[in-house]
Image 1 (tube, protein in one colour):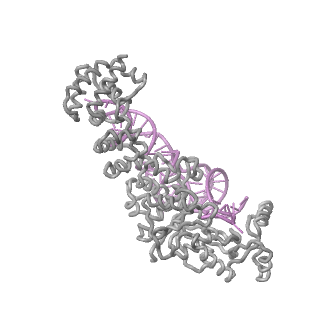
Image 2 (cartoon, protein in one colour):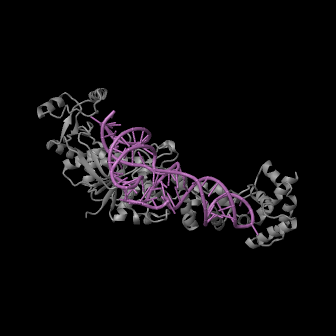
Image 3 (cartoon, chains in turn red, blue):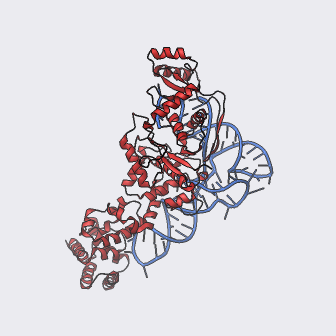
Length: 479
RNA sequence: GGCCCCUUAGUCUAGUGGUCAGGACGCAUGGUUCUCAGCCAUGAAUCAGGGGUUCGACUCCCCUAGGGGCUACCA
């Protein structure tokens, strides 16, 4: 069997979208699983919308996700260049070759004429297809048209009466009946190729063996198959993967929150988590774990297990997967990443070892690093400030607070054991236990009713701050 | 309008003629002698509808409905 070569072919018209990222991921996983090559080709023939800046961002996001490419921008390769804008001559040459072989022909119809014909066809209930006006022109007629300065594009001559079928790896056999499309443009009048043509020419010349792409391209496959046949090169196999939809079941877009990889990256989701979640959108593992690394995913990825129906992007599930990764990786793997999201005051006041302890506690359930501040608020250095509501809840706990103060003052070094002892003895002396014992202490120290284990909070906050907070709380309720 | 594709709980999915239709997220309840979280346990919830084929359909075929895509000198 030929060595597997797959490609991801983004157009640099925006940030890397989760849909595109998943397509790239499936390609990458397939290549790695098969021991083949993963290639990046930038499809920047739409001059209106493509920018170099987006191109750079796209590649950066891909790298961040861990999807390294064997050939493409920055990696070289023997089938370059890997930007379509640098391959224009090739498309023109191929297009001319097809004209010479009578498989394509120059077309001089103007936009206005085309638009008019389409409207007319629609009105009369006919499928809007190119009517073949320029198809039969001989060389003299063509020259005449050229002389009159009409725009000249090149159309593919669609062979009549041929049904086409492809054996899609992900969805099985797909049949395209004859007459589905009319002669379509392969080279625009501005000299640039259209998507279908450029993609087919490049896939052929880059020796792509498997085209794995979004299901929105399924219908395009018919045109590309015809181009391949005309080109006389081998045909790749196709695998169309289902689309990713938003909650409202329409194609994922800006309206659905943060559909860009960059957004999730900025919110502090680990790349491994994103990639893990994306892999399970439209694909399923045979194992029973849903928490897998890129390497593990590559180990068992198979296109045959890609589902047929579109899936909805579910941030709740992403959050769960991400929290699992962060917890499993712990401080060893994720502390550095999380550190960037820690409030400055934490960084100023706590030693690295304490920051790590806080991270350990908080990462029991942390979907992304930007949530750290919120989740770690019980550890905020300094004396908590709270309002009347908290003061009310604290009312009646003066004696208890006094006992805590006395106990912590008397205690030596505050470690887990001594902290527990102080709390226990204060409870005994005050005649309270359980919630009545812990809640006042928690409120006085943090200002919040909920939070991590109190002994951990106390040991990290330190004796001075604990005492200062307790005294402050006592003063507050004595006012 | 034409053509192509899709349809299992709220969500991601397993399933390829005979299963109590399995798992995960989320949700609910209980436990874990401070809370939240975590963890453990339990629970509610699904084959879009209708026809066939068959001894037997979630599984095969047809129709309907819904969704998506293509129908461009966008990709």
